[in-house]
Image: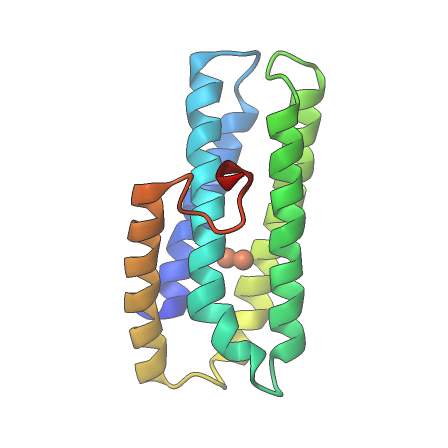
Length: 158
Ligand SMILES: [Fe+2]
Ligand SMILES: [Fe+2]
């Protein structure tokens, strides 16, 4: 397993949860559970990915811009998550907010998979990409166990 495969696996989980959430309606148990799962997946993925994919790239000439761009998009995703949290699930606006989040997340995952992975393969050696995957997966499990308090800078800490 390399870092690209590890990240891609989690992206697929996110895409699947979003698709399933789009099929839900109203303030139902199903929507609540899927939303909680999606939120956890997105937040945990962001922090683990920043630590073990983006952070080392910030120091490189080749990918500093891309790494900054990717992390800025994480911030935008966080804001859309907050918007959904602030909107009642039984409100007609909830689905619209979810669609905005879907568009942003799909765009972001595409940037990573279609563009950043290819560039990162010129920066990370095969061995490094395997070591990063192991670290990424370990972090992901730790953040998941302690979620939501485990997420640095999250509003859960306030
Ligand atoms: Fe990302
Ligand atoms: Fe990602």
